[in-house]
Image (cartoon, rainbow, N blue to C red; front, side, top):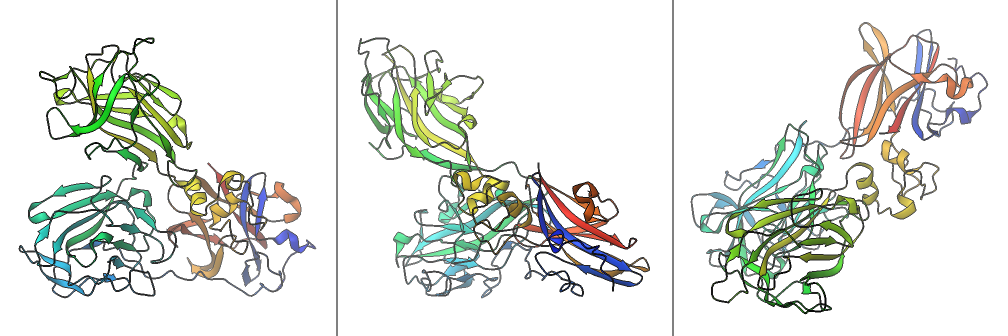
Length: 550
């Protein structure tokens, strides 16, 4: 068997390369008569690989049925509790099974005693959206006292966790079940149906689920019943997912959650949280408003602190939203009512950026509701990923007879996707996070390792090499060539290039259009395998996968 190396140094056959910011994975094909072999030459001696054909190891079985109804007595449908091998909450559920509900006609997954303060339901199989996009996670659940009487739902400590190895690092921890980030439907007999978006997983595998239906503060004083759990999918690509980075709900009497007046002006007096003048809301308001006569009347409420958009430096701010109304007078005074919202003199500052008045404009959208309430949405995407350190709202203009009520204030960030999410996953920040960095010193930069499935913190894991094997197609032998690309909305364009002579250098490579694309499929939760058939019609050819940032 002839190799046609033409005296080229072994370095010319490197399995990976970078040229002008474009990244490659190589493979050499040699054909002499009927003697054919594919040689995967990534960092290996060219003679040692002459008779080796590398075949990808198939991934573990994948589950596509993600709807657990618990309708068969005794059948937990693969759900278990934590064990000592997985997490510290092992054995905190004394026993659980699928049985008749204590109250009602449902058949449910139910605990039969809680031994500790961290009971956990887990499902360990890998889950696929089966060619679609992940949409929501939904659970119908309730808590019971020890006598079996349903209790009002308490979300404290009720963790929900997706992805990665159970008990290991890398979990995606969702907000507590039934909390403000979930869409919650309260039903009779204290059932809740809680739904949350999981669209950020796009088409990727989910490697495990965990639900804690009873919070850590419950100890052994509660049980739970789960009617069903399901993960839903959609055929349409999801919009970019948002994260609630911070919220001020003002639900506890007297607790302003850090909001104060401007103490230098002292025009809004007695900032507090109390019942709204009408309706069921608890609100942030003030006892009185006075003009201090120092200069122009300028009532302000302020907050200072520090909130990150999430996921290290890679999530970015999306919107600032609040629900507010103006009052004709002070709360508690006879005749005080809500009024139509007067836009003049209002103002919002996010950090030090002037977002403008509380009115429809370049950054602001206002929606009118009943009883004088308005919902205000500011676009704060221009703030990027900078920490949120201060907020100022001027709720009305120069009229000290007025007052205000704020129902809630919420700040959302846009979830990291693509390269940004990947760098956050590996904890890369600052200069170590830029695409050209090589923090692990393996001579492959971040973008290369991102594109081909490497680990930027481990010099021994640089990515997935192409694999190949000889197959019969249409009465002749062809090369089945499989390369790996990042799944989902990766921000990377992949293509094939070929050359017949490496002595020609960069000028010898050109786009290869002779391959037949057979299809692609999930390789793991981050990478897809793409299969091509390459005809054998030359004495020698080199083929490489090209990855370019979009």
